[in-house]
Image (cartoon, rainbow, N blue to C red; front, top):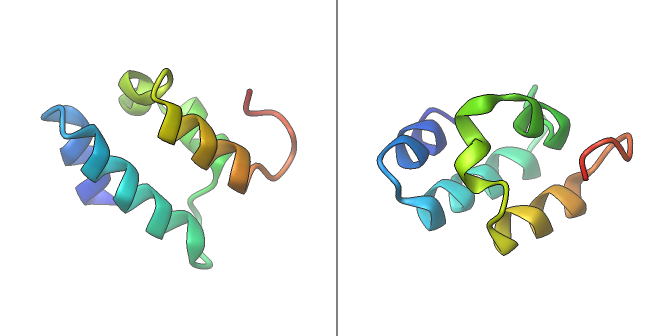
Length: 64
């Protein structure tokens, strides 16, 4: 998860999304709702891969 934050900050969005995919695929505290609430990931909000990732791991139907 830390690498996803670093990749997002430096503009390596595809690498950030790869890390987020892994983080969401394992049992952990990370959730799609958390990603949508954390402003650090705001640069990813319009990325089609990020949107698909959020949809895939949506828990409560809150992340649109």
